Image (cartoon, rainbow, N blue to C red; front, side):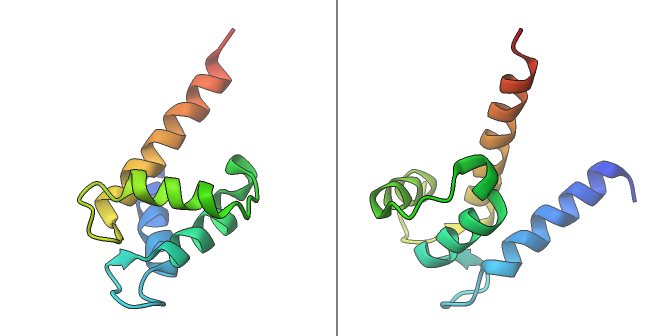
Length: 92
């Protein structure tokens, strides 16, 4: 597998590692999202237990307002964080 294919496989595996623990396997609940953010992105986002911050992230991600974060909404999060990291490391 190429590096990009490996990255895609890792993104998919990370989503399904957390989804379905509280219901639908194809979506993340607010609790599942919090667990994923803490475990997988804690180094970048900080290990915040701030409920208001998690609520706001969840609300912003839940583009279709169905009360869950689906795979497309999750990928948007990862893409946005990746772009921010790239900007941080490429600033002169």
